[in-house]
Length: 130
Image 1 (cartoon, rainbow, N blue to C red):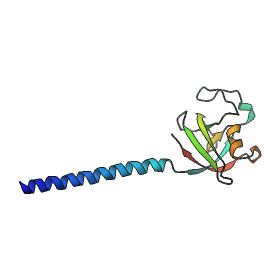
Image 2 (cartoon, helix red, strand yellow):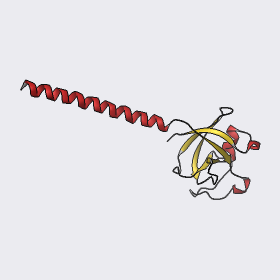
Image 3 (cartoon, helix red, strand yellow):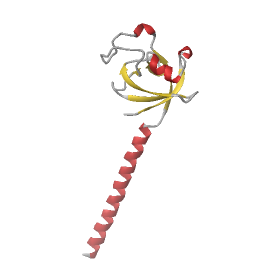
Image 4 (cartoon, rainbow, N blue to C red):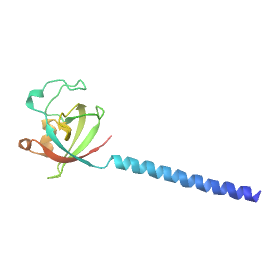
């Protein structure tokens, strides 16, 4: 009987240890998704102002929005210019960009928050907020 009791106590300790490992691994997975990734971004040309986006919204260059190839519409993303540390939070509401080297196309309003429009393309780091 004592052997059975010791075996079940041992099994319980292993169970708690494995449970703790699982909880820790879930936490580290979430923090990994909030880590920054690098890319370059550009902005929409004036000719798109007033057109419909892939989400059905009307594009307004003053809004803090952007396009991404696969992120769900409504996803919020923090984008930080690596040269000046200026940041902006955008909401994905369109598909694009067409250039494979870029992850996002930003509205002019969002781009202006992190860089001068004359720069056209800037190196950034970004993280998904939701």
